[in-house]
Image (cartoon, rainbow, N blue to C red; front, side, top):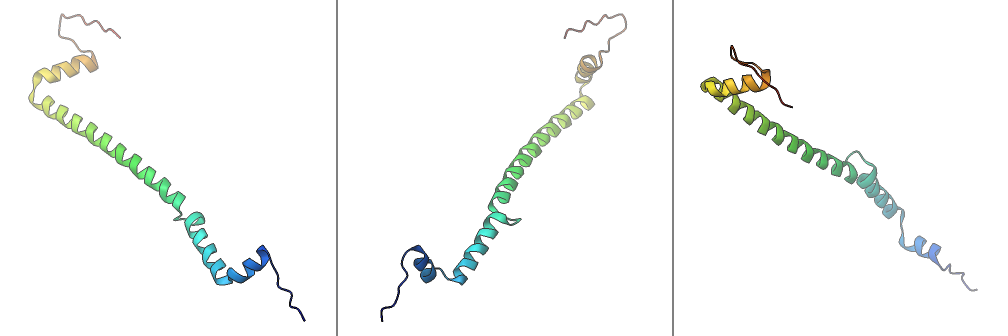
Amino acid sequence: MKRNHPSGAGAWCRRYIRPGFMCTAALVIFVLFFNDNSILNTYEHEIEIERLKAEIQQNRDTLLYYEALNRSLDTDPETMERIVREQYHMDRPGEDVFIFE
């Protein structure tokens, strides 16, 4: 009596791909792509972190500028006069101010 040996892809799958391997592969795929900590989410979070770091640096630079300006306003009357004239359009008595924009 001759045994009927299956051939082709179905036989290969039954022989080499075991249920434990399939479960492990499914778990790895789920963790890598469909989990809250997936690769895509991690990449998006890294991009957001870099954007926020750049924003923090920009805000820090602005803060340093205004701190220096504040110090100069406290100590230098000419700086205060320049700021008041430029931003608030104030003038001295008997002086005409022309604003060009």
